[in-house]
Length: 116
Image (cartoon, rainbow, N blue to C red):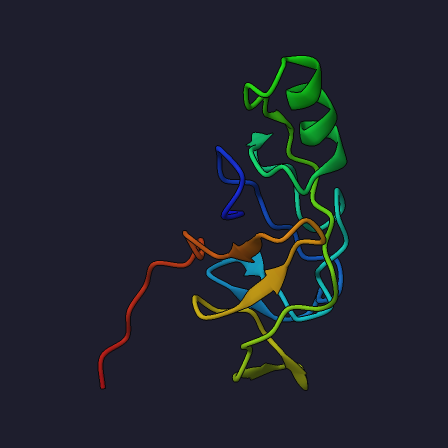
């Protein structure tokens, strides 16, 4: 989920085909390509996005959200666990959007908890 988006997107792994978690490929730090690994987040609500700023100006200052297309600025941070020798994403992982928001994991897609 992006802090300026109106809906959660979906993450898809393309950089790890060998390690599965509950039958799904685990995501790693390199899985940060917009529209490939990270899908849109509904509508964007920040004026630092040029499309939102232009639409808002055309609406005489009334905030006019526009499609939230991920504009990832750099790699994910916060992966501590290694999978296949690569840091994997977890609930603490985040990456930044060029327009100022931060993208975080709301639902990891893996729900099993193993207690020791």
